[in-house]
Amino acid sequence: MAAIFPMGRILRGPRVFLRRLDRGQAEAYQRLLERNRLWLQPWMPEVPHPLTVADLRKIIAGEHQELKRAQRVDLGLFRAQDGQLIGKVALHSIQWGVSFSAGLGYWIDADLAGAGLMTEAVARVVAVAFEEMGLHRLWAGVQPANRPSQRVLEKLGFVREGLHRQELFINGRWQDQYFFTLLETEFYARRAQWVVKGWLGD
Image 1 (cartoon, rainbow, N blue to C red):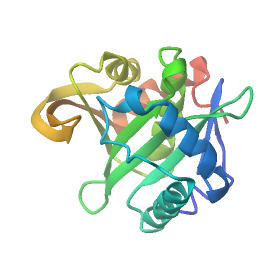
Image 2: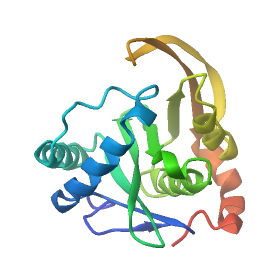
Image 3: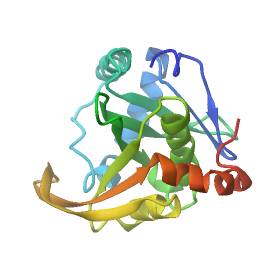
């Protein structure tokens, strides 16, 4: 999988691009997380505080190791106009064998939420998951109250299959999650539309 996502490879969309983070971007990553700590608090596991640049370098190194083991892919999300780091997209919990599936996670700077940037980013990562990694099924868990995140998946054709009750302990309590999925055949049925919208970039 490292051959699919080598350091330096860029996935381009109309207004964003994605690439793996390196240790030199740990400071920008740290600033982004600290600025969005309260924004992310209801939806994600707690961001440790204080979170140092050294901590982020270790996290980035750990992401590289998990990619080498073909367990997950973590990509930084950047704004095309100025190259600013504005979020993350990840394929996690990757299963091969009889499953060929992965979970999808994503978040963006609070100041840029709702502008459609995350839809472009997720579409680009989904395309690589199906076209290059050969996955069969992608899934994502989203809390019922997180409508913006649900809209990203709905625009891309993910199907809401059901509710996972009290699945994750986040923000001090057990949280329910809606379970969304997209199959390889469903992606290819929509691919032409994504090309017209420019989501698949290069």
